[in-house]
Length: 356
Ligand code: SF4
Image (cartoon, rainbow, N blue to C red; front, side, top):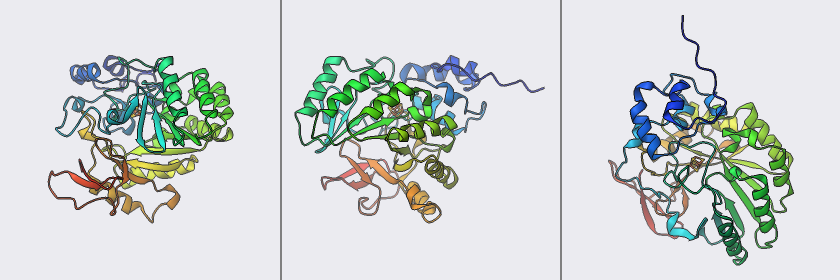
């Protein structure tokens, strides 16, 4: 008789040992996975653990959150800061890449740790989890003193890891800045731990005087559980619309069925697909890379077969911090064949290279 799978975990799994005991990682890989765990943060929350099919290495949720031995290999083009956060840091926790927007990172922990995380060298246990209060105040003082900033993007880490009280304090400061028109929140919480969007948090979000937009990071239709869909509806009830950003990932959503299924599921959940990101070249992530030609062909295959409202913009965050550009004919320069880098036109008109 076949052994019953271990019961779904009640707590976030944070080690190779816990994942192996839960039947979500192979015991034969223990040594390699412990090396991965020593290098990069691991967290698989219960909602996602329950979605993983034990023993299936191709499970699209497991691929995203369960550590893999391939993470121990760093490709020559991979770097710790692939999108050039540091080059644009105006002070601790504050990144300015564009004239009218600023990225504010008050927290450096997440409810899960993506195996392809673009900030994997800077998020997770081992870092100070939160910006100290005096640095939060200093960052907000900087925004208050810069009237050209129209939009503040809370990112991290996951801003919903902050308590409602701390978030409320940030929103109140932003509410008092007449020049800040919009506040955006980038989060994985809707699918990783939707229960965190409780009454206390919804009240804080609903009380913001500034328009809030939530941009949820979601890569596969399976992530859209009934709890996640309810969390989206709860956000909408307090006046917060939800967009999605996804990463094109080998073995997760790199097929017409996988990507089309995700985009349709997002629309059904009342979420507008916003960005589909080309993978950022963070260390140990090459096994997730999908070449840009393949990404463009996938979107082309989907065009006309799914609603235009479901189509995201296929986007590159140019390595080194030169900004985001759509991976379209206007921005892509002639791409040589072979293992040469691709070339794109950056927002400042310069030509920049990337791992195609
Ligand atoms: S949610 Fe974002 S910051 Fe957090 S681990 Fe995933 S990619 Fe990294």
